[in-house]
Length: 134
Image (cartoon, rainbow, N blue to C red; front, side):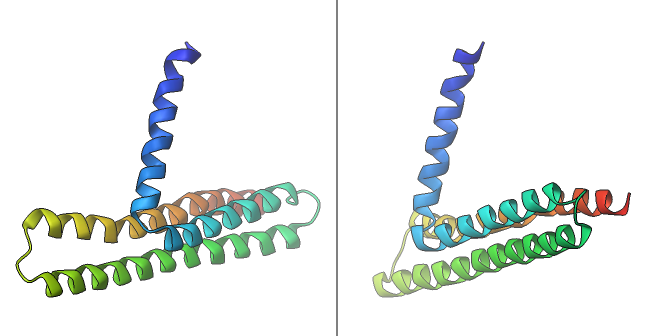
């Protein structure tokens, strides 16, 4: 059973790596750092929930700030990518629809990754808020 699932995870990992590189390693790396930081803060918030509620709330705020930063970096990367795409279109003059679509796709990859960086920790923050009130 596990051997039949392994190729699926390998192909998913390769696809994610391909999209990561397409989106531009600089902005995608910054967004990934924000995602990892927000998940780290969430884990620390859950671990300190029973011992120190104040520390748990601080970790929750830090996770929220890191996830918002990832979202904003994603939008910034998208805007810069679109400006670069339009500059290339302007310099080439007549551009095919396929080239235009490819440039816009790459520009939106950072936005998608930024939204994922925002949504995933937000779910954890909601659960942590609920557990803090109990």
